Image 1 (spheres, rainbow, N blue to C red):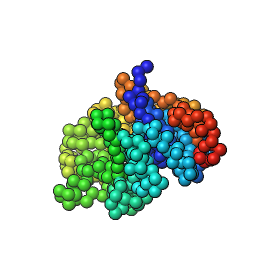
Image 2 (image 1 turned 90 degrees about the vertical axis):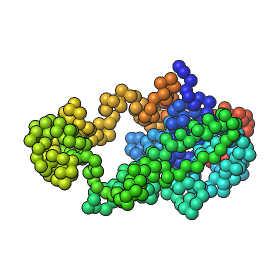
Image 3 (image 1 turned 135 degrees about the horizontal axis):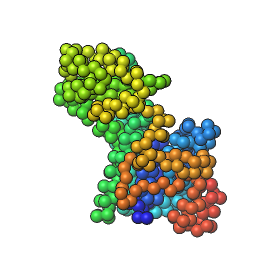
Image 4 (image 1 turned 90 degrees about the horizontal axis):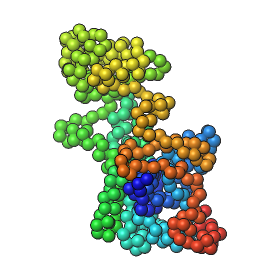
Length: 404
């Protein structure tokens, strides 16, 4: 079996929730040794977030925490303890990369800022990811993904034109940022390989999320258009939306982009006469009569299952997809073929599902070697095996409650 791409990379992970841990899990799945620094008194909020395995609460039973922390070690450390700087010297001297996502200034306050740590490890690469980046008038504002969804304007785009705005499900910024963090980090690793020099990476989650809204921002800059909520409508397709199908709460998303596709669609639904109907014969007329158009499409989809609608249209070259729920996704044949979900046994949660990266390196694919760690389960291993401390040194730290 080939060695993994990041086999020799050593990562010290101070991050919490998703934006940092999802990055470090990506590294761990490709062979990096990742040590999570945690605290009993300052828990990662995901450890105390539902859903819990078997609906039984516990610090080691959160499916949410588990999802983003496979293949890692967990070490608890009281950063306020008088001997914390001593242990930090060992940890920083060991690692290649340190990842943190505290409010800017939090690491510096404890004496663990980049300028402090590079004195211990001159070629250290430190990645700091925060809501709005380091420096500037708003850099110390805290918040989570929902805050960023509002700041970036994503919330303003979500919902129906005649209703108040609403948040999209989940913290999209937390899911978006890790891929950009990985790109920046790998560039810094390559820079160090060539020059021997480390650096401090500053990733603003606000800016990273805006990157995905570039077309709308360009539209505003060039034409003054302010894009806002429009439900399931599209500026470049009609019909475009989610249409009801047979069964309870079953739907299929359909997109028709041009007149050629419209002609095919009319033939498929058994209404070829609509091609020449002045209400629908051009894109402009279809947009002008969209409510009536959607009723015609819904009248056809209601008589078929969502799967039938999707397969019939896909075979004709029309974009269509079943609106899947979680049960559907775990049975999805394409995801099964790709090995997207993998199971591994967790000491408290039993067999548990993990999502693998959405890409595959043909020579060095990701591997799921172990489940998310229980809180502090690797204190001794990290100290004695990774850092090289003696058993006596470890026991001394343990007796003084350095590992809280």
